[in-house]
Length: 78
Image 1 (cartoon, helix red, strand yellow):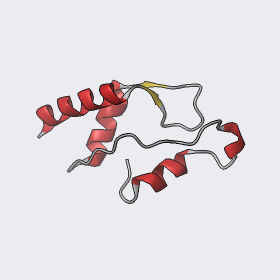
Image 2 (spheres, rainbow, N blue to C red):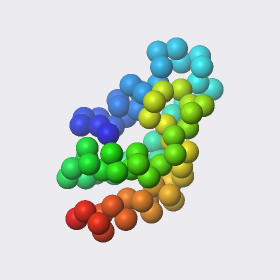
Image 3 (tube, helix red, strand yellow):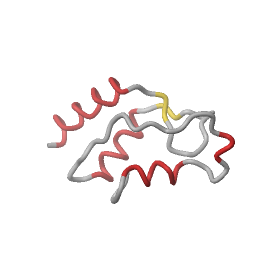
Image 4 (cartoon, rainbow, N blue to C red):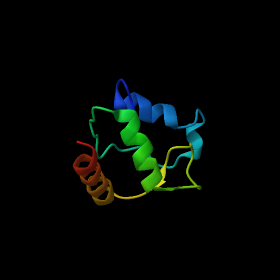
């Protein structure tokens, strides 16, 4: 979740030691919601965390899965 620039938020999630990261982050999707905190909590419950990732908020998922989940969220909470 980002209340400002989503790209800045992604960089906050990457540790200060960039040498541990082999590839640069690539932003593939950005979702906008009226209640972004609720959407974030809901998505976190749906997704499996990537325990091998650097940082806390990385999940094992795909673009298609995220779009599918977002559509479900919009149907249920809009």
